[in-house]
Amino acid sequence: MTSPDTITQQLTLEPDDNRRLASLCGQFGSHLRQIEERLNIEIRNRGNHFALTGNAQTTETAAELLRSLYRETDNSELTPDEIHLALQSSGLAALTEPTETEGASTGGDKGITLIRTKKCTIKPRGLNQQRYVRAVQTHDINFGTGPAGTGKTYLAVACAVEALLKDEVERILLVRPAVEAGEKLGFLPGDLAQKVDPYLRPLYDALFEMLGFETVGKLMERNVIEVAPLAYMRGRTLSNAFVILDESQNTTREQMKMFLTRIGFGSTAVITGDPSQIDLPRGQQSGLRHAIDVLSKVSGISFTHFDSKDVVRHPLVQRIVEAYDDFDEAGSAD
Image (cartoon, rainbow, N blue to C red; front, side):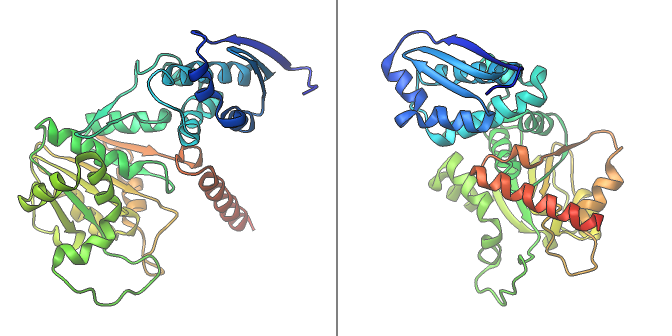
């Protein structure tokens, strides 16, 4: 690192606790190497004394990240996944929007909206996820769009579960268009729920994690949690309910208008989708894209747009999304 902008920042973490330092650094320093690669800096340490070498902005970001992670070691052992998620919210985001993310990286949970469910407490990662959760909690109709792995659906389910546990709504409705991802599955046996179950598996997985299998089963028996294909929503008025329309990029314009006009008093609707993964027949316009254009200036509706930097899955997922975006942009420019 011979650039004239390169500096070395000293950092001392207190208290000096060997167990916590081992958790922070990872086996053979793997966690520190992970941070070095993502922030393009060099980290050296002896005990609780660290030297961070890089440009001023990245070394300060790394210092705040290490302080935040060290606080986490007081209660739990850090894993590579947690380091990755912390980098997403406290590291890379801070490089572009340091003022708005400062509270998330330096002040623990101050300013961060926590979602509390029966079995876990969920903390949104990164500025966009925080904005998304706050929007869902304060608006009746919300759109969350962006690539896979950005937490759109998971956080929507978490907000729905929290609202149900707080008695803010009487039921949760999970809605999705039954469109195969480029495959023809043919006739599916079973009753309505069994036919739609394969399409709603991500929503079920989130519910099981937040409420447990037994509780989810009981709530579904009582129709407190209801599964409905989008085609069956016509004619209904959904009051005092939390409604999630997942994979909305596969709705038609008519279906999207029909769904949005079902919303009744006391209800919250979250519409999630990825406009880059549309499985509709060629030539048919996505209802999600059309709705964003039509409703963008309507007051009372929130729009949260995620991109590749918000991906909270394996780091390769972020690179895959970026590669496809770059390829599509190059193709449209030709």
